[in-house]
Image (cartoon, rainbow, N blue to C red; front, side, top):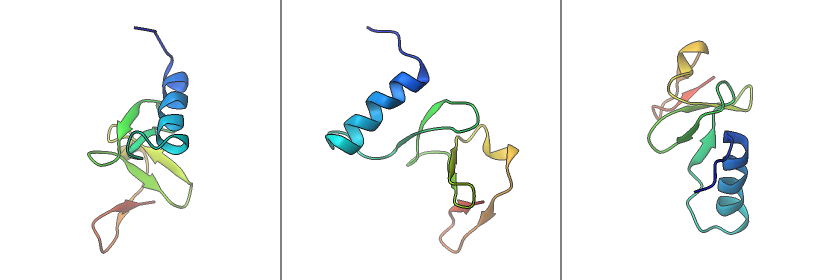
Length: 73
């Protein structure tokens, strides 16, 4: 099994999601700590900053709940 950095791994995941469509478009890379996470299960997108944050890093940023229950920054 090849050893990839989180940047390399996300490049592969992005290509499989966006270019080939072989996996669902639910995987993102945290803009704070660079960890990869499944947006269906954790993490949040900050619309103001245009950045994704994993559930471990959301406490570092201010988010408010929307009517749908999603957190936005």
